[in-house]
Image (tube, rainbow, N blue to C red; front, side):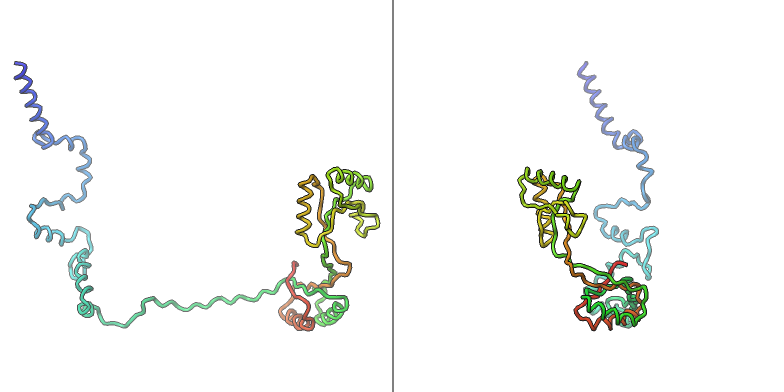
Length: 278
């Protein structure tokens, strides 16, 4: 009895499981769970169920334009226009017949010629000429006076850098110098001398000179060595020649004055003309 009941229960269950997905008992389980999918269909009226051997009918359906699709000039759908153009592209004679006669055009569109804007020449606000010796500076100044530039001309004395000195700045006069000497000896540095009171630059008197170098790079390298040995107060100062050079600075020259300056400078070929900070 139990086996018969179990048999019939299994049979009924299989029938229900077989019929539910196929809609034999109303809406399918998928439709009941996701009804929004049916509402989200796009153009369901365009769907057609065709037999497997209806290739001719399928080709006719593909040839019909979709709603809203643009059509070609002859009324054929635009989607098939490339396919119609393919044989003409493969056949040169057909392509020549299909191409309308007209004026020849270049491959790249011509662009109108544009004229670059003219940039006005900018005269530096400050022009410097030099370096003159005293005699040449007098000659140049006499010729420059003919331009009547007034306060636009400034004459300056410059001196060439001849060497660089590594030194410890003075502090507390001679007593401070003695303390620095004792510290240098303690660090094992013996190449130094105290700058005397007769030195031309009073700001360096009673300082301690640690060496004279031709280039600034060599002086900086020695300062780095001193720092590694414990000397952290060393500085570098440029030493200049006693005989100075003369330079002329001219500000806010007009183009006419600049042209006249170039003519005067041509008589001094060894001199350089350059811009300067105003």
